[in-house]
Image (cartoon, rainbow, N blue to C red; front, side):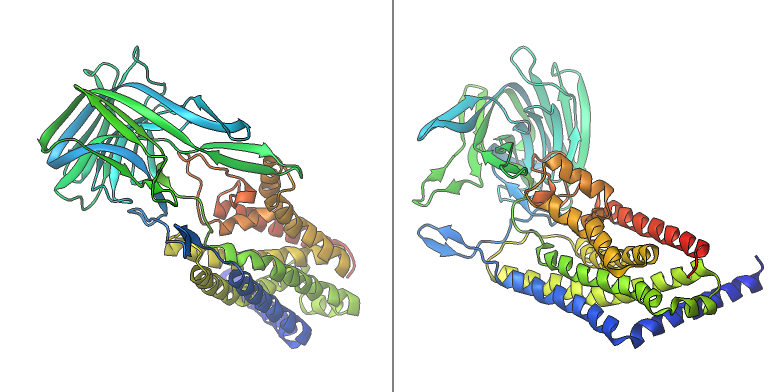
Length: 517
């Protein structure tokens, strides 16, 4: 194609695009309905946030829930473990031999008031060595540890995890663990015999002070069980666990001073002020026993930032109606012939119509999602809800992505309208394809596997764009749609919706060229 013909083609497409925009804005009902979709999204989102209150107890008094603990990278974290440590000034190394790792798990009571505690370790129970900026919760750290079922790991700053060798710990097969500090760089090692060492990984903790805390720790997240609900969905429950690590051959090299100190980091208190599930430690000669509960990991419990945007579903239905009417009205009134006379290349005409509608929808939706997300979040926080924090980049992705979801859904609905040429049939088909799978998958109706399948293969996959908290492989969690977790990454989910819209539009253009208007 020559440059002249290419330019002429672009000018022709621009003319078609302007014509479709003119059609849309001159029909008052379409403009009002699109504005209503944006307004409904905002009003329902803010109304929902206004009715969502939360409080926490401080003894006998109800108070606003404290904000989530935030780690070095800005994520909400949980930092609860038992720590036996001493100060380390400047560079140095801590080396231990872990000879045993045991634990307890509380299972459902066998009878009313009869506790059922069994021996065992949950998969991500942890015991090992740690260098931490301070004993303050949320402060930077790096750790080398053995786990219940995932072998040796090196983790740092809550979200980072590197696998070492698999396998467990026993007196016959102990694990030697080592963590070395050189400036802001910490390097983890493991060994089977204390002589031949294997490097696991390296972490850079920028801004570490000269004096840090080095020592041994133990932690054990709750035991997660997922059972089938009466209605077909799933019910997740988490119960108390603890882990105990037995250490010997403890050696700290470098400028380490002072006696070993025990700290129950993040210890919870019962309403009467007594310790709730405290950890403990003991020392006999050169052998240390450390027992801990809790976890050192991202915190995934609590209301998420995208909660106010649940109102998008209602706005989406209005967008679908407008999108279908934008094309079927021309068939109903016989105006499609005029449109095709103005643009004889039928496929190009349909693409121009879809692009115009998509741009209009995005322009109306973006302010609505921005206002709902921002003000709805402020209302939730003012009502005592401790919203899990997310980065500005994630916030922008959610707001822009949900507006893009509405635009792509509009294009898909328009394509269905062009294919079916019947308003009611096209609206129902679009709602069944986009809205219904999401509602069914995110309520306790289907088993988790079926819900995940729906959100992989239907246009409803696009709702993954709003997920603010990612899945972490080293955190045991109920990663199910009912808990706000989608089976596809955010942009991949939106891409599934985009593919459906493109395929439907291509099929509609193909049929439009083949059959009479």
